[in-house]
Image (tube, rainbow, N blue to C red):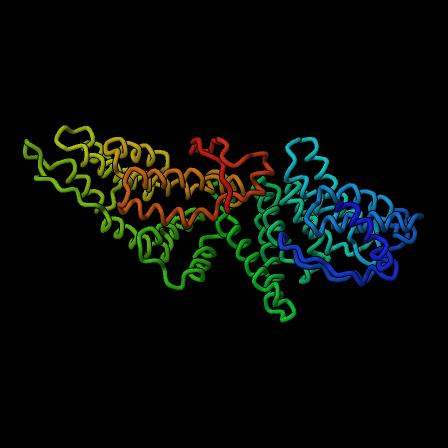
Length: 499
C-alpha cells in the first residue's frame, strides 16, 4: 500500500521537479555532524560522466527513480532507497544539474551499509564506492578542495584508509580551501601527519607545520562572525588537534619530540592557570609533562614535583605499629622504609618495605598496606606500571575486601592510552574498558568505602572515553563480546561503546 501511495504522488512531485528541482526543501538530518552544504553555483558540463535528468535520454524515468529513493531517505529507510538511488544515479549522476544529491545520498547509503554489514568483502566494496562517489562528484560539480575535505574525513572514519592517503587528500583540500577549510577536516589532517611522524615518514618540522596550519584555520573561523554557527566546532577540533600533538610522547615511539619541554610547560600554564593542589590532579598533569620530556631539571616541573612528593607523603596512610624496632633492638624494616621514602630514596624504601612483607612480625592487613605503598612508589615515582601492578595485586590478595588496590590498578590502565596506542583512537580508548573493570571491582569488594566512592567518580568521568558504537562496528566487534586488551595490560574484558 505504501509503495502505491508513493507511485500515486509521482505525477505531482515529478511535475514540480520538471519545473525546477531547486525549489525542493532539504530535510534536516540530525544524525550527521557535517555542516549543511551551500547551494552549488557551478553547473556541471553535460559530459558522459555528468549526465542530468534532461540529458539522460529518459527524463521521466530518471525523475521517477529519484523521487522514490528520496522519499525513502526522508523516512530514514536507506535499504529500500538503494535500488531506486542506483537507478537514478546510473541514469543521471548529476540529477537536476544544480545539486549533487546523487553523490551525497549515495555516500550516505553506502555508509549505512558499511555500519551494518559483517561480510569483509562487501565492506571493502562499500568503502571503494564511498571514495569513488567523492571523486565522481568532483568531476561533475567541481568544488575540489571542499569535496576532498569531506573525502578525507570519510577516509579516516569510514574507509580505514592509510595515513599517507588521508594526509595527501586532506593536505590538498587545505591547500585549496585555506581558511575556508571545514572543521571536520582538521583532526583527520593532523592525525594522519602524526601517524606518519611516528612511522618515521614525516619530520617533526613537517608535523609542526600541520599544527600551525590547523591553528591558523581554526583561529580565523573562530573570529569570523559569519562562522558563529560553527565557532564551537572549530574550537573543539582545535583542542583535539592540540591535545594530540601535546601528548604525543617521544619515548613511546623512540623518536625526537615534536616540541621540547618548554612548549608543554607553556601549554600546561594556559590549560591550568591555577595548578591542581590535590594528589590525583597534580599527578595527572606532571605525568603528562614527564611523558613529553620534562623532568626535575626544569624549574617549573621541579617546583610542582617537589609539592607532589610532599603530597604523596602527606596522603600516605599511616601504618600503626607498637614498636619501631625489632626484637634485637635494631630499627624495624617498616621504620627504615618510611625514613628512606621521606628522604626521597625510592629504591631504598622499596627494599625495606619488601622485608616487611617477608617478616612474621606484621599482620596481613599491615602487609597489604605496605604492598600497596610499594605499588604506588613503582607507579608514581619510578614509572614502572608492571611492577606496580604486581604489588597492587599482592595487596589485594593479602586483604581481599579492600578496594584501594583495584582503584590504583584502574588508574594505571586509564593512563595507558599512550602505552597501548597513539593516545587517541580505538587502541588507546580500549584501555578504558579494563580500567572500568578494576574500578567496578573496587566498588564490589569494598562498598561504601572511600575507594568505592573514588572509583565511581572515575567511572563517571572515563566512560565517555570508551570507543564509539561506530568504531566497534567498523572492527566487526559486538557489544558484550570478549576482548583481550594487549600491550603491557594483557587482560580480558567485554566490548562496550559510549552511550
